[in-house]
Amino acid sequence: MNQTSVAARNQILATVQEFVQREVVPRASKHDRDDTYPHELVEQMKELGLFGITVPEEYGGLGLDYTTFAMVFEELAKGWMSITGVIGTHSILTYVVARFGSEEQKREWLPSLAQGERRGALAMTEANAGSDVAALETTAVRDGDEYVVNGAKLFITNGRYSDVVLLMAKTNPDAQPPHSGISALIVEKGPGFTVGPDMEKLGYRGIDTCELIFQDCRVPAKNLVGYEEGRGFRQVMEGLETGRINIAARGVGVATAAFEHAIRYAQQRKTFGQPIANHQAVQLMLADMATKIRAARLLVYDAAAKKDRGERCDQEAGMAKLYASEMCAEVTLDAMRIHGGYGYIKDLPLERYYRDAPLMIIGEGTNEIQKIVIARSLLRQYAI
Ligand SMILES: Cc1cc2nc3c(=O)[nH]c(=O)nc-3n(C[C@H](O)[C@H](O)[C@H](O)COP(=O)(O)OP(=O)(O)OC[C@H]3O[C@@H](n4cnc5c(N)ncnc54)[C@H](O)[C@@H]3O)c2cc1C
Image 1 (cartoon, rainbow, N blue to C red):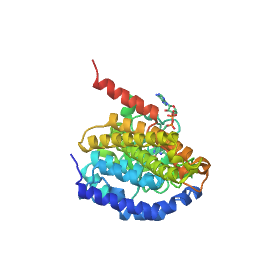
Image 2: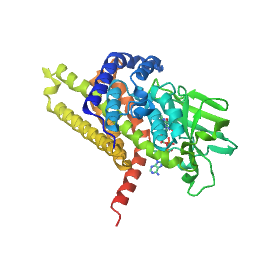
Image 3: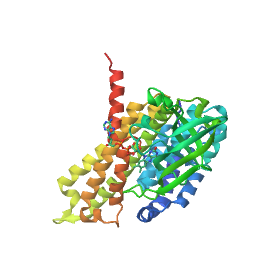
Image 4: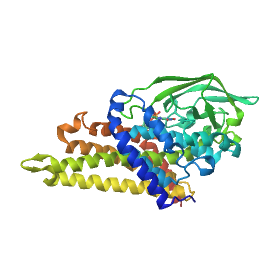
């Protein structure tokens, strides 16, 4: 059981809130518009220790719990959702190494990852394997003390600026069921590992999302997580629980930012001789928005608390991700409605919030897949 003290939690949250207000908010719209990578913000995030939020202190991290992790993601996303992407899949990598890696692997990888000296990505999706992860075609063939990797990954966040990726590849392509042939390898950039062009996106801009190509890329066999083949699917699926908590927290953060703009604007903007906040139709919208945000936040805390108790939380994390992401899309649209024409104009961040919201619906497993995960878990729970 990992539980952060109230004092430690408040301290990191105050630090992150100040960083967001002082550094992130003033730069977000320009980075978004120009689709430029926020190198200067990333350097500051390293100094704040955000690359190792949950990495145990003995391996150089902050050792905070997943409830605090979720709160940090919410605060960052209130400023600019893209900035959370830099530490999102990076944190899945650190989780998998800390949870399933050998002591030697933890000592080798975690300290530099926690400090952001090495930055990580998750290389799972392929052109023909998104929701159906087990259909992936990238192979890792053992050759003496190395694996030889061939294949290509698509949509990889942090693909360009990461130093190391957690790669899912088939060490046994003939295995049945297919997911039992998947292994997780820690792969550093080097010969045989090429980064393709950045993919241009609707939202979540400024952050690199690329294709990664592996051509006879040689990876030391000691980089197989836990030194055991065929465990990669289970290892990464458990890591994705933390990914879904972070995606849900992002949804809460973006929706909160949109709501706070809307409730301020509603008290300033006048129509028919009075602030639009006096019109009950607008009040009803504000009440619905705030209620949905609160419900989503509580789902996030519920999933994070279960993770902090050391339990699997696929059902709770799936529910939080499903609800918070759909809520975020609804609330950002309502915030735009409340702003009328100004909401649609790029001078205000409302249209950015609206463009960023769908990533949370698709990423880390689409919401249709979340429903399948939730239903399977419920059927296990209520099996007769
Ligand atoms: C900006 C961005 C960043 C990303 N970052 C990463 C990353 O860092 N690392 C990584 O590995 N991946 C990443 N992804 C990939 C992402 O996880 C996948 O796009 C997502 O899992 C969906 O896979 P797909 O695109 O292949 O869609 P598909 O799997 O082809 O799905 C298409 C549609 O069919 C539905 N569907 C599929 N199967 C079922 C089913 N059984 N039942 C009901 N509906 C179904 C889906 O819900 C969806 O609506 C990223 C994607 C984006 C857009």
